[in-house]
View: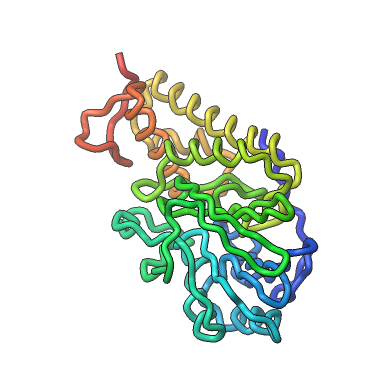
Length: 299
């Protein structure tokens, strides 16, 4: 079982000092994919970086500008292009003059079949592309490193804060829920590799964009990985029991999950299917694995 952390104290629009170097302002956009809202992080004092400006909401922009009054924004950093993370980057840039850093949206992200409630910000285009990771951003007393973590989306980036051995994990790892991996932009193979990459870094704390921080990091990531492997085993059992279509698996596999999330859950199962087909464990007669394809165990 994943040891979820869901308790968080905040007021919408307020700026809270959550660590010596980190402040957080939460947007009033709660929902099944955003939990209680998008947490925008401000790093440092005086000369600061802003991570995940959030949805294009005038009241959230006003709250951020109030929190940043008298300071200089040197970097606007975006984990990925979903509409609860990136759209406010340009309006914030217009007010602050800071450059936007992130990974450009791949063409496959525009596939209408993958739109979830959070949605894609297909207009997202950073000023400086950091897709490969490794870029370092510095300010007075703080150092951030971009870490490429594709999987949730093809362009997902996490940001490590050196001074606190902390990771801003975007939607790659969230304390309140598992992450949707929705093909074709989401990729389960890449996602599992990215989980291993983050685990190997040994961070002391994770700051997801939604919900509270994860403080017991290693066991949490191990549980995240184990959950995915358990889901894979459930998929394989369903296939062994003669259920060859994804839609027939969802009511059983996700019985404990809000039904509003079942369409997204089906896309995560598709992610598992694509991964299993790549590995030669599952086969399909369809030209490409899809939601409506028939699957069976290889051999």
